[in-house]
Image 1 (tube, helix red, strand yellow):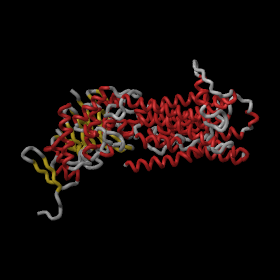
Image 2 (tube, chains in turn yellow, cyan; image 1 turned 120 degrees about the vertical axis):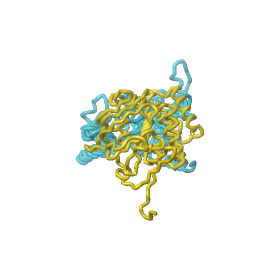
Image 3 (cartoon, one colour; image 1 turned 60 degrees about the vertical axis):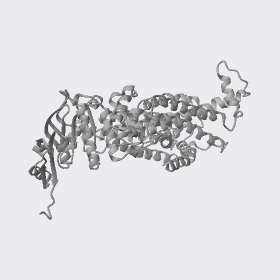
Length: 261
Length: 347
C-alpha cells in the first residue's frame, strides 16, 4: 500500500516562509485538494513534494525520505503537472508522452519495447490515438491537458501532483479532466494532490480539502467541514453563499454586494 | 506512431554520412591546379588495396590532391561538424535558438591568443615543430572559458545558466579589450590578425587534422551521447527535473564539451561565424526540432556545408583566396532565407 506523508513541511524563499508546519498523511487512492487564495503556498507545497524546491521537515514516500532519493528514482515515484506546462509546438504527441518514460531510460540509452508499450497503451486509454502523430502546437486546451496527464501517467508513479489542472479549461473540459483524474486514481490506486481554485469542483472530486492561508493549513477535512461561508470570508475575503445539496455536494456561490434583494 | 522509430534513425545517419562523402569527393576533385576533376576518384580508388586503375594522375598532381586538398577537406569537415554540433548542443541546453558556440568567450579568448602569437617575433618561433598560432588560440580559448566558468560559478549561488552566460559576456569584453590594446601597439600584424578572424582553411595540413581530431572526437561523442536527454530538456528546467534529469549537470557537461571542441576548431580555422547557428536552424526547419535528430544531422550537414563553402573560395577568385567566413555568410544567408520562406509557404 503506497503512502505519502508530510511532516512539519516548511518552504522558505529568501528567509520568508511560504509554507510552514504542514502535516498530512495520504494512502493509495486518496485525493487531497489544496485550496486557498493566490499566494497561499499551494504551488510551493506541491513543488516541495515534487522535489523541485528545498524544504525542511519531512516528505516520506512509503516511509522513505524523498531527500535521499536520486532524481530518477524520485521521478518514478512522483509525477508533477505544473500549472502551465511547457509544450514544444512541433513535438508530436507520442514523443511528448514518451518523455514521461525518461526515469526508466538510462541517460545514454534509448526507449525499450516496454516503454513504447506503456506509451501506446496510455494513448489508447486516454483516447488520444487520433492525435498521436499530431504536433502539440495544433491541440486545443482540453486536448493539451489530456496529453500532459498522459505524460505524467507514463511515469507510472504512485503519486500524481496537479497544479491547477483545470485553470485553462472551459466548464465542460474542466469536468472531463477531473473525471479522468478521478477514474485513473481509482483504477490505478494513485495518491493525488492537486491545487484548485474552483471550490465547488475541489469539494466535488477530492476526498479531503486542505485550506492554506499564508502557508499554514487553517482548515482541513471534507468539503462540508471546510467550505463554510465564515471560513471563506475570513481567508478569501469573499462574501459567498454555501449551499448543501441533497446528494452531499457543496456548492459555493459568490454573492453580489450591490442590488441584493 | 513514434517519430523516431528503430529503423528510421539509422537511415539518417547513413544519409548524413553519404552526403559528407559525396561533398568531400567534390572537395578533393575541384581546385585551380591539379588533375582533371574526374581523374581524382579514379586515383583515390587506385590507392585502395587490391585495386589497380590507371588514373593518369602524375605524382605531382597526386601530391596536390593528397597533401593540399585532402587535409583541407577533412579539416573543413571536422570544423564544420564541430561548430554545428556545438551550436545545436548549446541551443538545446539553453533552449535558445540564437545561442552560438562562441557564447562563453571562446572566440575572444582564441582571438587574443592568436594576436599575441602573431605579435611575438616569428623568427623566434620559426624552428618550433608546430605553428604557435593555433596553439596560442587554443590556449586562449580554453583559458577564456575556464575564466567564464570560474567567475560564473563563484558569483552565482547556483550553477545557473544565466550567470554563466553573463560571465561569458564579461570575459568576451575583457579579452576583446586586451586584443584591441595589443593590436594598437603592434600595427604591423593587423592584417594577419584580421584575416585570421575571417577564418581560413588555406594552410591546412594533416598535422592540423591530427592536432584537433582528439578534441573534436571527444566533444562530438559526448554531445551525441546526451542528445536524448537534451531533448527531454525541451520542456524546461522544472519539468525536466521532475522527469528525473539532473538539469544543471547535463548543461555544464554539454557546455564544456561543446566549448572544448569549439576551441580546437577555432585554433586551426580562425573564427568561422554563422555555421554554428545557421546549420542547426536549417536542420530544424527541414526536420523538426527533436534534438535526437537535430544533433547528429547538424554534425553531418555542418561538415558538408563547410566543405562546400570552401570550394568557391579557392576557385572563383583564384589565385587569391576569399576567406571562408565570407563565403559561409554570402551563400548561407540567402539559403537560410529561402528555407524560412519555404516553411512560411508550407504553413
